[in-house]
Amino acid sequence: MRSLALLALTLAPFLAACPSGEASDPRAALVKRGKVVYDTNCIACHSPDPRKEGPVGPANSCASSELLAARVLRNAYPPGYKPKRDTQAMVPRPYLEKELPALAAYLQSLGCEQAQ
Image 1: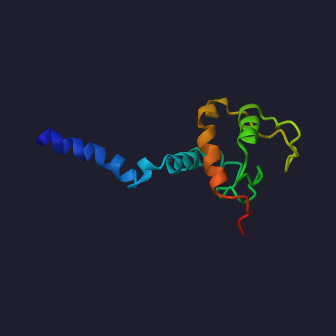
Image 2: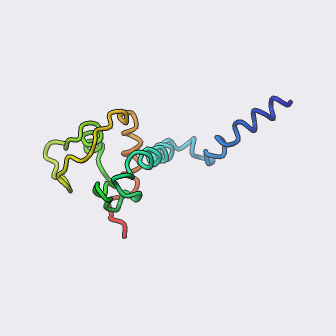
Image 3: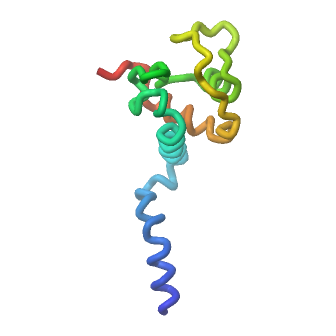
């Protein structure tokens, strides 16, 4: 019985972090993961609110998966894309390749409107 109580105490923070229903909504889990990726990798240059301009990087809510892959992985633009800021300041982050679907889901979940 003691080991069961210890297991419950060990798992409690993880269970509390998963609101009910999230496990059955993979899209919500992907968006949540994308926010974590954004908050830990992007807000140094982009705004904490992706709908707003950042100190170095532009607003990036609603960014397409193609744009994210080009910018994040290669510091490039997709063919035919007209950039908001034509800079080469962004450093490629190839280690984020597996996180791109989550990042795209988060940014696209915010819509394309600029925040006031």
